[in-house]
Length: 57
Image (cartoon, rainbow, N blue to C red; front, top):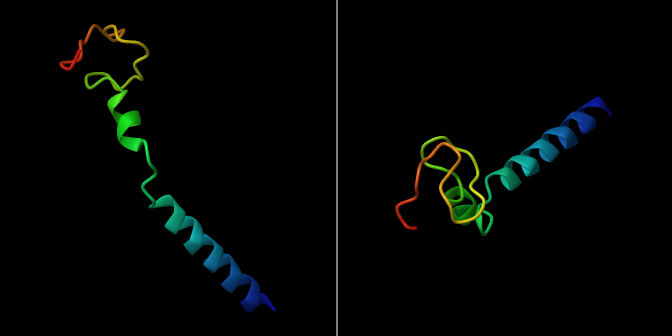
């Protein structure tokens, strides 16, 4: 019985690891919304709070 529980636990952990490696749509857009200098999320089109201005604006 204990072996069965441990086996199901390990299978469950393996499934969670597979979902963790998936590339979800929209991740590139989320990563580009961060400031390249300080790493904070940028809201709006203006400069970041640290003063860094995006090159594509």
